[in-house]
Image (cartoon, rainbow over all chains, first blue to last red; front, side):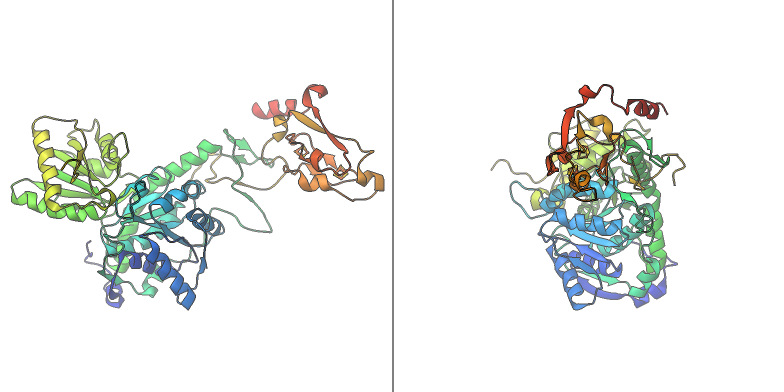
Length: 417
Length: 111
Ligand code: SF4
Ligand code: SF4
């Protein structure tokens, strides 16, 4: 986090400092965004978000429609319907809940609806486990949503607010991902901006792509055929590929919009988060530790420990995982000796998702570092700093021995003994 | 914002005849109406119209009796199933020679 010199001092002066969990930070952001329709189904560790929002709606503090539903599939379906007619919507889920709504996750993106959904990251069953990793959101990385990963509770609040501006500017849905329990249930001081500051920064959403006008009705979401065609009135319509290509184009445009919105937020509210990526002691780093979410914070301690031992280590944090910040990553990693990616998820039968994405985007670029992967923290397994640093030492020894390809390292795994 | 001719970002259109494409070329069996059995024709007034209600493609126009637009009828047979008077029967498309919409479809494909 950095506070720009020109930060709106008035905004910071009117903000109130509160101690809250990550879930409360997410709920508070939704309230500040003046969401009009909320539909969510409780699941650990996301449940307190839903409980807080429903309490505010019940008390009248939040004048929104809270739709109680029987499943996550219906929760997102309600948001899809409400967003289609132009409402600002919010939902949140975790793990199996996200898996249950997967069909509609794809629909929301293909229909270009600016829904914001918080994900309190949790392991996927089986075996049953309610603790943290990032397998849930990683499993829907290709669905066409923007995915932003947060380091702490302040970033959850700020990112959720930024998410609305990103979503509504380009008509794409945004997932704000934060680690279950590690952030969702951990209390931290959070600066809550004054409602008037956010009202000015995030005006009412009034430009949906859908036309909802009884006097000039539309078919919304009719089936498309393979090829473009003219409709009965002669107007040209894209086929499936044209609509999908434009979704992809919008996601690529988001790469410019995320840093812009981050700095606009900084100017209005007084905090910004690095846009697509964040870094710690990266300037002269030869060994770069890469991760998304709170694991990145843990890596900053590991990097400092490595520095004490004479290893020039630094951290590059992934804030935007989708769209994947290819150019920014190439710029930050050219000329380094090694990038070690710590994934809290696994593409079973291959390797960690961030690791393969990063290696792919660096492949063939000049001065690309060796890219190695490590998997850690699955199902809430602890990620102790000394073990994170140990993995970096092993990776560095392998890179210095000339290895360019290596099996995924498993951190803190105890198959024997 | 896209500048292409087919640049609409989402699937959305104005409701109109044929908006979902020429579904008539999906048809294997065609509904054939025997007007002498149709309740509306028998009573000489706009009654029944159950076939119009049930057609999932909206290709039956109300009338004494109702008129089926074969350019868009996909041949599902629901109208024949629902008609309380048994006035509609499904007959193999092949029995009717070349499908009447072929020429129009070919013209559309060549555009
Ligand atoms: S109900 Fe089916 S068969 Fe009958 S007219 Fe409609 S599409 Fe054709
Ligand atoms: S359902 Fe049968 S009887 Fe009724 S209007 Fe249609 S064709 Fe006539």
